[in-house]
Image 1 (cartoon, rainbow, N blue to C red):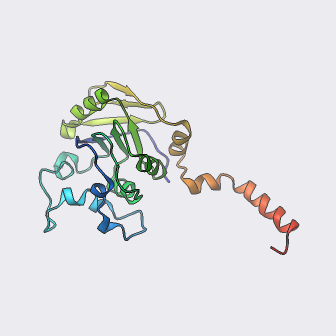
Image 2 (cartoon, helix red, strand yellow):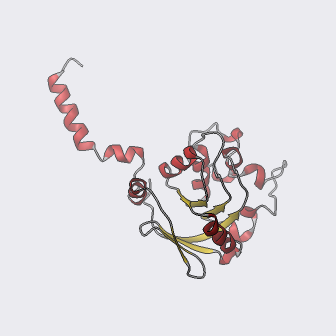
Image 3 (cartoon, rainbow, N blue to C red):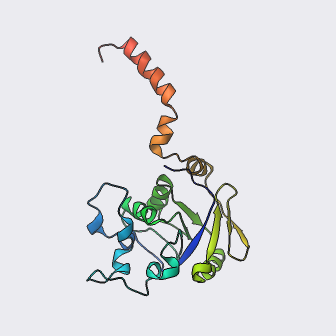
Length: 201
């Protein structure tokens, strides 16, 4: 997993509440076990009509937001079934952070494991960022994970909380495999000792 760095990107407003994982990536696309290639189907049923044509008024189809890296969303983002394909699709599209007042627990955890920062803020702060996001291409928002600060297009700052361990993992690009590999020396010592003490295993 890549290290999570400070970045500035366009924030897309999605004020809907209860955006579930089937809206994020419909079940028809769950056949793959690859983490790449799902971005084109992100919010598929909201982005495209039945003939596969783009729906012009969907936010991510509007020119200012086609390269959005941040989503500012309504309450309870990522609810529904516990599919890890949802953060895979967001990440593949280019989304690096999602801001909401609340997230479904499993989705919230899966985001951290896949290099996406889910940020929980009070309603008044989400409303301010939603207003900023409505500015289109001028909705440039900076997210500084190390200092836990979001800076809006006018320079206003909003502090956010994040679990210290999860922050460490994102900043250092550590997923579950990376965390295990940090213990490689200890694992090797254990394996060597075990082979000497139990050579029949």
